[in-house]
Amino acid sequence: MKAALRIQSRLITSYGEHVSIGREVFYSFPDPERLISLSLDRLRRIGLTRMKAQAIKNIAMTEYEGRLPSVEEIEQAEELSSIVKELTRLKGVGPWTAELAIAQVHPLFPLGPRTDLAVRRGFKNYWGYRMRP
Image (cartoon, rainbow, N blue to C red; front, side, top):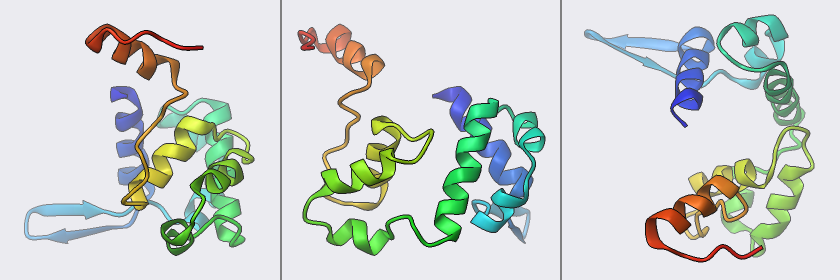
């Protein structure tokens, strides 16, 4: 997770918009147009694998084309599993990523990721839970 946060920070500070207020600098996440315009090599320079860089570009293009569910659609969805299915159809997005994205915007989504083996092992080791297949 530490490596992912470092890469996210590099992506935001390298390609997001920024504003300075006093001595503080604040950054926004790069918009889809900016991400689409970046070469795979530029994305790889911040630490992404080629596959993750391509996935980011594909997701950005999907958002740019208006084909990603909006925050409002996620908040109002009665059946969030359909949103998870929709997101996991995108190349490079698995259940863990889809569930985490939904949990960031939906106040009642039971934070997963239940299918992540590392998370399941962590629960087992910390609380002594048995792992089910």
